[in-house]
Length: 611
Image (cartoon, rainbow, N blue to C red; front, side, top):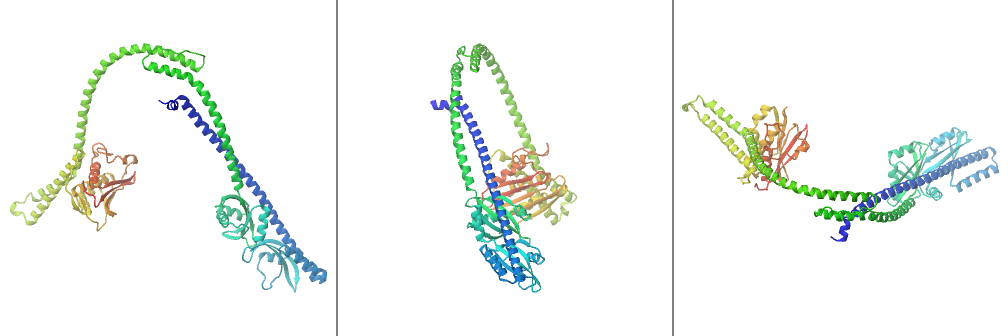
């Protein structure tokens, strides 16, 4: 044996291997735990940062609303002052307010109550009622449909109320400024509709829309709650904060800020690499130290192993030196005592061996005698089971023969040859024909029982499967009358003929039908179906009986295996049927559920020869 192979089988190698595996598992668990802690910490940091940005977004939106309201108020006051004073100073002030609003991209408009073309907005009705208000309004088309609209009453003109509106569009330019200020892309969404976005990534917007389509998230926005979540886009992972904004007509607008989480992912990857490097170095140092310590401990054991080999060769009585008081020294003392005990035991064993040899010879002769008797008993048991199976299989055709014979005797007992009419003679031929058929079936059953002992080929021919089924059911008609079981037929028409032995197939169908009847002791319905599937014909027998336990289904085709009580079955019916179908190149499929019945399906190929 090579040194490497000897080392691979040594105790040092096995202990070291177990230690290394445990060390690797422990360090891997530690790395994964620390990595998970770092990941959660980075995610929490991202969440806190995004929440802070969300507060800045809220402050910006509040500033915009206040600024729009302030311009509406200034515009209303200058318009009112101009109407009342009608001097140059008021006009100049109004012009200054309008110019400043254009610089801020704020649209100043004046609307009169009841005037044609005035929008029917709730915010305007509030202004006509004398209330200053500011709200979000979706109007027009394009990327600047969402506005911050402020309304301030401006008194009367020409006998009617009027209001001044200051509208600030929240379009792409606004979103780009906010994006630069907040450090992320800003998008405005309504449910299922994009209003505007500072992002040029169409995939990101689609992913964002799908993420917001979640009913729970949009329900939170409808309730006025800001939300934070993350999603993975095709390009890179994203972190998202969403502020809900309610328009004057009750619609919810999602003001979304999202930014890349790539820095978080990179930081996690770097931390993971650092952890892996540190744990690998630590594992290597600990492994080397452990192997050195193990080697010093195992060395005395090698000496004990060497001397143990000598003892195994029959060299008893040798001892090893004992040094120290540790566990290895105790083992050496135990070894020395064992060596002395083995020397004494070897002498006793030799004496016992001589005695045992004589006893073994005597018991061997007794066992051979018992074995011969057991073989005879097994043969008798097999013959008895086979005889019971033959009786069970022949019971039905013999009953038919007796039935036809009884009918013939009863019908013609009192008739003399001169009184027998041609109709009587024809009926007698029918009875004898049936008796002959049943007798041939008895012969076929006995031949099938021989298939357990030898393999043989029987005559085959073209046969119609539905005809074989009909003949079988006609023979078993009285069985249905006695058991109160209904018969449901579903036989496909126009099926081609197949090569086979009609008598053997009739025996298969008889076994399956009788088993189905026994499975329904309280009555029920037996359904018989035939159909063509591909290049094969199928016959299915479905009952609604007790079913078969899953653990027993794989054993039902074994010879002499039965689930019936003692004396009611030998377990040969299904095994014989299985052999017949196999010789026809087919198979029997079984599906069953305890308490809900079974389905036995016989599949017979059209072109497979019968063996």
